[in-house]
Length: 146
Length: 146
DNA sequence: CCTCCATCGTTGACAACCTCCACGATACCG
DNA sequence: CGGTATCGTGGAGGTTGTCAACGATGGAGG
Image 1: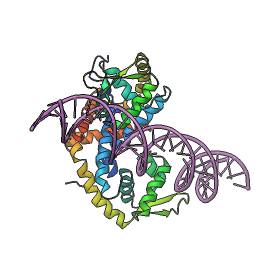
Image 2: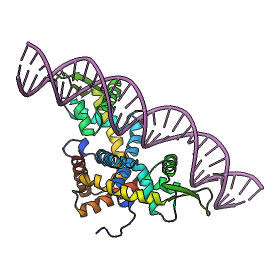
Image 3: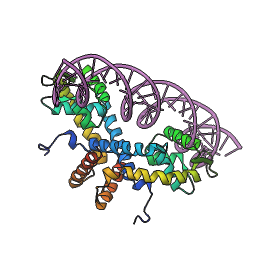
């Protein structure tokens, strides 16, 4: 069918996706700048804090949708600040488990407050049901694109 | 209340947004590579084709959420390939209107097919109602973040 | 008319990011 | 034991994001 609609581009889901994502990332970055963090680093830190047994860098790359070589640099920066540490895995000596330090967990807690506050403006106006629905749709898009 | 939920990061809308966006942009970029286009350029081209009277570069920057300096380079590349042209505005001589050429419109048509086909995998599984809802939510996020 | 200030496009510099390729070390399979 | 695959790492090259200037033009107020 595809009869006349509004602006072709502002109807394109891919465009709307990247534009909204850019805005949110921008806001989060400025909020995290006070802690010397960028969103990428913050994401790695959260994942490290979240995994009691540590996370493989390969797992980080898969979850974040990044190239493994990027993860190396991110973990380097976090480790250089003592927020995470690399521990060799006993099960598979190729992998190095990334674990959050106490300093890392502490920073994550305070940074999380600022991060959520920063996206309160764009995302806060969504109803709870809408947020759940959006979460579901975005994860489905991600898995379908894998 | 904020009681226990799933993975903290995979519940973060900002993260899900940027991850899904990255996947879609990646797919679109590889699809457009055959035409020598990237998503940015393609977006500019679409907007230029869409505006019969031409678009100001400032308008392009606003709609795309980009820095004006980026728009300059994008239009340069498109103009260098004869896909768009810059015409001085009579109303405001500071601005230069970006207009699509016939070649630009022709390329846009064929590129659009490949672009939509590329995102068919991640976005095709969404029902029409879901897509409308997603469009609405994403535009609201964008305007709220402005 | 003239002055002050805002806006548009443009340029340049710099950091961040993405993509790809290659390598050593280790694991796994036969 | 030999061949193949995976993990982390490094490097190269291109793309994007951010910011600060600058000249040219427009617009408002005296």
